[in-house]
Length: 295
Image (cartoon, rainbow, N blue to C red):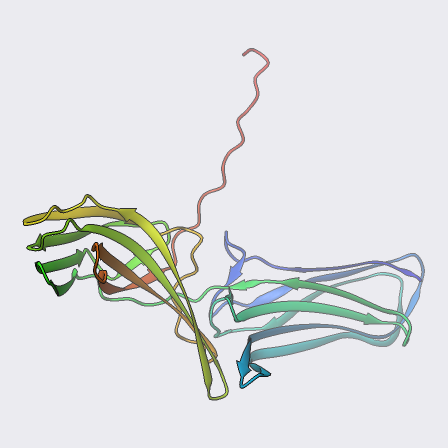
């Protein structure tokens, strides 16, 4: 074997190391050899695709629903049927890439990858692979306050809840206040709870499956029987949550703000408000503390 190392890199255009629509994908591929090597084919290719797959039981039979969509495929043949004693090549594979953000969910994923393949013979094939992330900003012009009202009747009286939030769109890591006004005309104490709900939707052919997840943000003060109170909490969007996206035909990611009233001996009262999570600013790298010989 004369190929000692095959290295593949792509150029990072920002602090995140991600690509967005309008960026150019470029990079370098390096081959280290210990002597002159005959090459049948040496190529670099880039691919972006969405894949969904989930199992299902139907009348005792096991089914698998799957589908995929390719967003782009580019290939650059660097060398073919030639000899070389070491290779270093710059490549430019594509421009103006328009694609959804990278994502990995319960039953599907959107991935972007670079691959290099060096073929010397049918028995000597060398490969290298790296993945890169794509980020596409979601536009949200709704920055107005939101409101929701729900009334529930019990044998002992009526409970009314009004929920308000400052706006619909919130960036990763950003905070906003959410308020719940509770009018408790029942004979029981009720307790508000605040949740951030995630909804993942996957589509394969004509089939559809949904995966949901609720994150408890906090529990408010209880509201005693025959009283009223406004309970507020500060919602902080976790910085690691993926942004909302709708621009993929195979999957989408949505969020809701949910406020519930924990009602004893009754069905919980709940209100859901739409919430769009937007791309936030990357955190600056932490500076390492400098050591001093005098402390």
